[in-house]
Picture 1 (cartoon, rainbow, N blue to C red):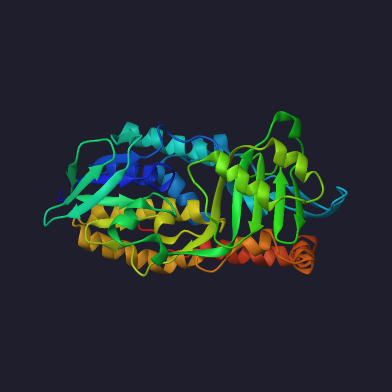
Picture 2 (picture 1 turned 90 degrees about the horizontal axis):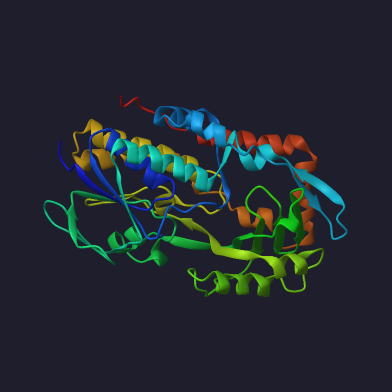
Length: 379
């Protein structure tokens, strides 16, 4: 087999899924991850429709995923006095199968290691130099190595995309909102709630994290590797908000903040480098990122195996399948939906959950898009 030595950057969802499939098909796979260990916790992720379920089945993890599923949690949308205005149903936020991101990552990591994939934590790629026969890779800590192929599965702020395709500003557009996830002490445990004021949403106890925030803002400057700096930004943008916001903001811990952004590329492969998941077609809070990453891993590994490792043919087949399927991530913008910038917008959003036929129509469109690909049986 050609090109059997493959480097994957990123150990969240798409990277471990691809590592499993490639190792199972006889490739020599190394996954490099900047974090010092497999990241646990984080928000819940979900799968929608028959296509996602088939990929989970073929990956051999459906039973384990179902054992750890969280189940969609209904969320009460309230006013400043705590009175219920509408109910956001768990089926809307949780899809058909919902699971903690950290749990899914661990499950994929474990089956990948069992299949023969190798993981290197606490390191990151610093340069890529493509040669006629491979890609010479340097690392922050490890010794340089040459791989046949490199795959970026390292998220919207992809390091591999930056090194191989160009600066992030060419491909990632800010959509006018930010989101944050944070832990809260036990005393805040209780029903899942959501409170809005124009341009701001706060949701303690909800299905995404201990506390979930979405707020409207232009592009901000902050240190994405400093929880303290991210907490400062969140507190600044929620200053003066009503209900229990001040109490919640005083207690938040382990804050993660990022922009609601959209990745747009005309091609996901360049030379010997390919991108999958959010690195290629991310749409923050769009609701389909995890399913897209899992399907992409299945398709790319299958095409590389079917071509005997001939990357040009495999990359073309992967792009042919995904340029259409990934349109699911091109249209939606969850920011204005979760944190409308006017009171009228908040009322209109709440009507969708009061009148279930509107909600059913929205969910039907999403379910149809999630199955808009014909899966080959690469076995």
